[in-house]
Structure formats: C-alpha cells, structure tokens
Image (cartoon, rainbow, N blue to C red; front, side):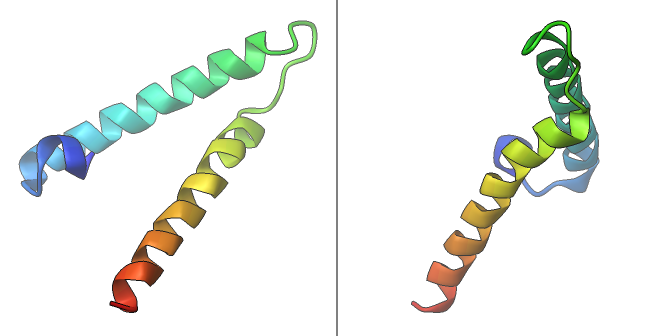
Length: 67
C-alpha cells in the first residue's frame, strides 16, 4: 500500500485496509472456485501467496544490509 499512496498515514492506513480486504475476498473466491465441489480454506490460499512474498521481502532486505 505504501508504494501506491506514499508514506502519509492518513492515506496509508485506509489503503492498506482496503487492499487487505480485497486480497482476502479474492483469496476466498479462488478457494471456493479452484476445486469446485471442495472448498479450500482461505488460510491455505493466503499462505501460498504470503510465504513467497515474505521471503522476497526478506531477501530484498538482506541485499540492502550487505551493501
């Protein structure tokens, strides 16, 4: 959200809340439609997306530390 709206917290907090809610709605829809008769829990979908993203952030931060 910070990349979209900048560091101003008056815009950052609502933008982060909106983006988080939109991501959860998308993940819920994906979990319901991916294997239709079986519903995949939303936690599985968010972890499949969130874990690689978190590792990417860690790797980026590590590169900044070693400069």
